[in-house]
Length: 75
Figure 1 (cartoon, rainbow, N blue to C red):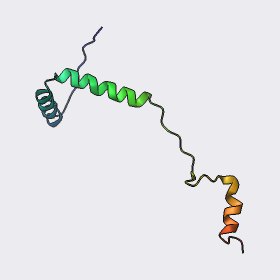
Figure 2 (figure 1 turned 60 degrees about the vertical axis):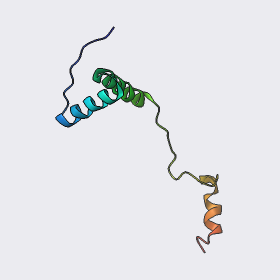
Figure 3 (figure 1 turned 120 degrees about the vertical axis):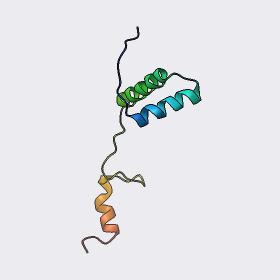
C-alpha cells in the first residue's frame, strides 16, 4: 500500500531533483522514496563502537605500566 504525503523543498533542491529525475529517467517521487529508504537504513544500521585510546599495535591497557617504563616514565 502506498500513502500520499507532502514534502516542502526549497527552490534549489526542487530544481536539482527535477534535473536528476530528467537525466536519470526516474520520477521525482521515486528519487524521494529512495532517499527516504537510505535515511532509514542509515538510522537502523548499528554504529561501530570504538574504544577510547584504541591500540594500533595490538597492545592493551594491561600493558600500560610496561610501556611507560620502557619509555623512561617515572625515572
